[in-house]
Image (cartoon, rainbow, N blue to C red):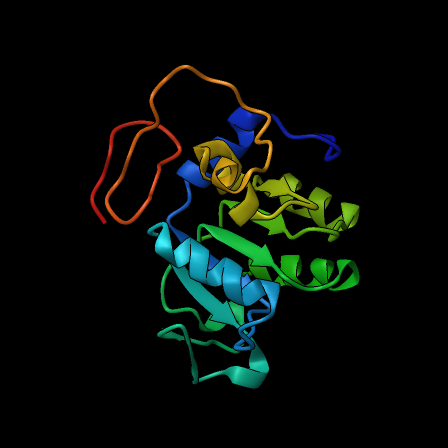
Length: 177
């Protein structure tokens, strides 16, 4: 797969198929992007495990912080990499040592490592690079349009509302949270 462009259907499939996310590089600093992505993904019903060796054992947004992917006590669907491009290979190798394997390696905005992507895809994982799940969720659900951002999506269909304050799903039937 080339990683220059992803179809909306592919991103939707990844986000719909994900229930648990390990966020490598999560920060307790409230002005860091990883903090507000963590907060947003929690608000959308995902179970998020912050990974940060320097914060291990503490909490971020009520979630226990783990020192490594191997320390997470339950299976992980997505590994969200909030580290630089060079670190993505090591994180991917760590993810591939897990049992069961995660379904997705997601590299945040400006993070791209083709070697890591090939390694993950060869193991049967889906890979997304240089994208943010918060932005993609907001774009696909239409929420991003509430702030005036062009979502590149036009539809006459009424959005599917889910439980919670101004919470739109990605499609399908509404679910409670």
